Image (cartoon, rainbow, N blue to C red; front, side, top):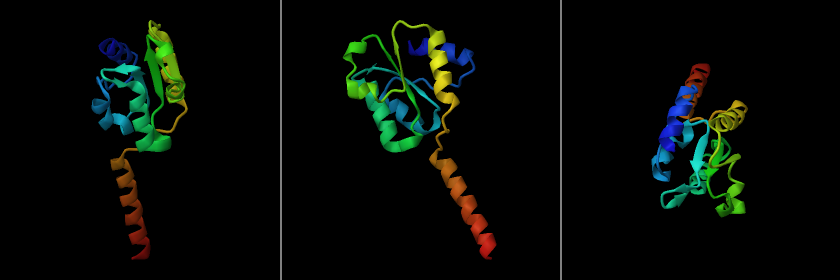
Length: 131
């Protein structure tokens, strides 16, 4: 499923980072506009990835779309973590629509590198003004 979605979304013009677990996704959390998360990620749950993103990035955490073949297994508190849900099987067009709706009106997350660059520029400008 991951490889299929990677191919379809890439062809639809999206830049895709496809990983198979929470640990593999962790380094990308602050540089993606949205997450498409399967409920079962090996031994972990997709909700743990979304919780991790929210804990680390706060309001800049990317929105997440939940994919699941077992919607009854998703606990209420987990459902609230996701901005949208899709029950397998689903039409890929529906996924693209949900993705576009989520990404279209949210601020982009800023990586630590970008934040540092902004801080450095601000410090440099303050030094020029004082000096």
